[in-house]
Length: 318
Image 1: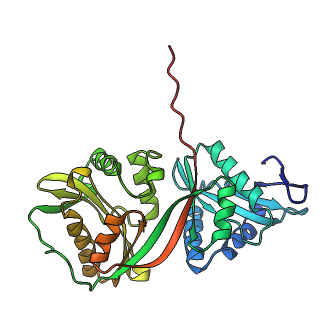
Image 2: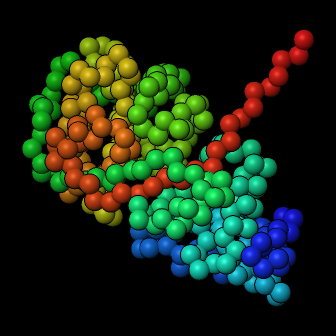
Image 3: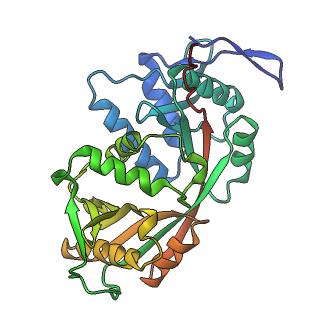
């Protein structure tokens, strides 16, 4: 149980605890009520993943209980990997959001997590301010973009200089090396660079893609490892997500990105999908311009907030 916290506005004692199993359903329903349709779908997916685990740890589901133990406020730190978690925020009408946020970041610190993130729609300034005041600042704005798979491709599908090797053909260390190189001087969420090892980053992508690594590829150019393309099918929505693409520094600015995006759209088209979707950091101008060449258009802007804690390196002993 968390220590009692003080609600400054009323000087009343507020208790924040890990949600007991007997009221877990009520807490989850409160979280669902706090989301829009898209957010509810995402939450349902996260909950179903937890329910599939026989040893699921729900201790990150935190509530403020009333006198009878029923939740009057709830938040959830959904652990994704040993270093990363999603933060599902309380309902906007909850009067104990600061206390719940404080308890959530305290719980994350105790668990040794490095990053706990949450995503807001771009116009939710009130929640953004509340998050910043409670140690969860903005780290990036993401443009969610999409394009029809019938868009005109910008390069021949077959190119003797470029090949796409399925990651299952690779030793894991080889893919991790390329991932590590891609992060160098990347324009995507630079605030998070260095927070994860390449292996930890890959674990996060595995968590996001239930089909992984069915459509994951190492990009090869002129016989060298040049980048990565990760595609995640969403057949229920008739689209494929370009979940991640990146090139190592030596191959950036040479037009190879056109070939990679071209391949992603071609594969989605061949699978009978209607769209390719993606999210890109709005500061990553080269990437946005590349996608716009193919007809990708922005559909939604969301803001990523994150609590971050860098792992301390052990001190050397003399």
